[in-house]
Length: 316
Ligand code: TXA
Ligand code: MG
Image (cartoon, rainbow, N blue to C red; front, side, top):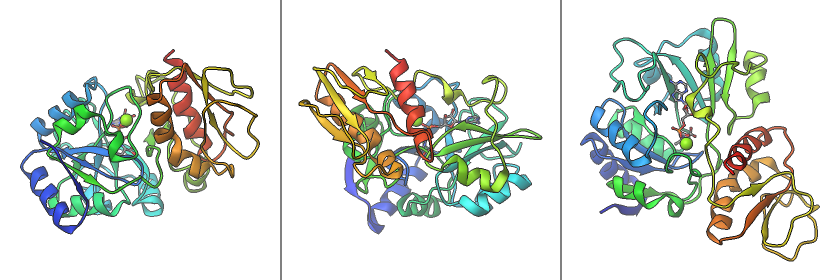
């Protein structure tokens, strides 16, 4: 039986003991909730894949406390080091060459020679890594292909059943997953837009490239079928129709008699990103015919929001 418990110094120690014993824990991060397990344990990592019903070719992010710990697992080049100095701890994941001796389950990287590393800024996630001194494999705590959970009550029952403990820390402040970057000799690739905006990254390492070929440089997580609610979505809607619920953005919303949730009435993309998954989950549960989404500007965190919405809409 999974125990839901408020995250505090006592329950963090309990969770750390569970993780060291190879069990799984649902932990808050500043982006979304994660289903965490010891990244060095084949058994723990295999159970994460099984619980998520995740295709095993899609590798997991390994969470570390910071640069010194990252150096146990990957070769940190100059460009990665400057990004780490500027943005860790925080919502930035770097896909780096894995050290041959890295004490990681090969399943974590799905057999690739790279590993995705991130140092979460959330004090609970950070404390768990410090208390265990383990790198934690933690994908978003949702079933593969479904919406990420930004509150413990949105974590799916299958994942809850797989974990020993769920540390409740309320809503995640950022609400959208980390930005994922990959490297080639000459380029830095944006593998997944996320909670750290492109412009902030480009200020440190110059213009980001888009991977031309998934198989070579891309992230398997760029698969289109991802992040979908059960209710069909219609995007860029200016005039919602009867039977639809409206996911609005900004102060100027169309007059509409139906259900409306506004991602950010003041047109703030950071607030909109934080609300995205929980509002979609809420409308999804209400059983509307369709969810109509107003246009979201493609700037700042709008890039990540539109990425998730486009993938979700393509499911139908
Ligand atoms: O914000 C986040 O990143 C959250 C929290 C819990 O930290 N985690 C998360 O993990 O979103 P997940 O497993 O749902 O997404 C991991 C992404 C996927 O797109 C995956 O394909 C990519 O990272 N990835 C992981 N390892 C990779 C690798 N070695 N090469 C390329 N892409 C990789
Ligand atoms: Mg995910």
